[in-house]
Image (cartoon, rainbow, N blue to C red; front, side, top):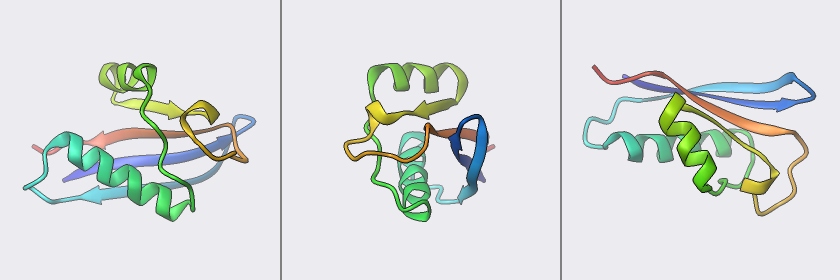
Amino acid sequence: MFRIWGKKWQNNHLLKDIVIENDDRTLNRTRKIFKSLEEICVAFDLSVPIWLDSTIEEFRRHSKCRFTQDNFIEHIDFDYLEIQVIEEDS
């Protein structure tokens, strides 16, 4: 099982969160992350953010990253969207 926790934050308060599970063994880790991020954005009614070099580096180091206004083309009404891998395939 592969699970990602998506959280929407504003003023250090959690506005909304969701856990996305992906059990598709045909997808590699990167594809699971992209698919899960898309599902999180659909659930939160957001456009899918852009992966900047700093975002990629943060995710590689910690399996967790934040998408701020710089990552979105449209204006967002919150501070950042955070995703975190909470369970990897075994």
